[in-house]
Length: 259
Image (tube, rainbow, N blue to C red; front, side, top):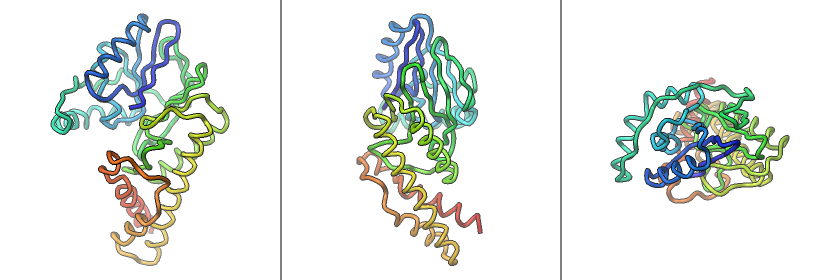
């Protein structure tokens, strides 16, 4: 997991602490030593593999978008139970968010200056975080070189989020772009990956729209969307979760609803 730690004046912001409990506890111990004045945990979105380590940070303040905060309350307790069986380990679950933040608000989290940016991860919820004083952008599940976009909510929202994020990366050219999955990227690398992701998502939407317009059945619309080639091969652990199928089904649902 691409957990991001930004330290300034003895305070730290930790973005998406995850994954295995022992690893996150070691990270938390290290951050406490680096930032004795205080720690804020900032969440990009509410998927379990981005929030499972919150409980390892004890009394740290937790901030997130409103939709992410709602997902923590309603989804994470059952997700943690399922994950404990699948991964044979137990996470200390924390579902409380101390402050809801919105995109577009320049703010400080402790001593760290940050700009949250609206970004619907998987078309559902969330933010990405720019740290302008450090040249770092934590992009969560956007711009991953080892996965393809997986749409679990609104395809339109995810496409809009990619457009906004790419415009921001082109404008600011940060030194480091950190996806949750895969290596740290330069701005140019992240833009190349994100642009390919957007071409794929636009193509999926067009294929679904055309199939729906000619009267195809729901599964046939999904098959048409599925036929659009993804921008890259995926690692086995991501292929296991059928990201391409989820995206095709989301595209079909949107196309049929628009008729």
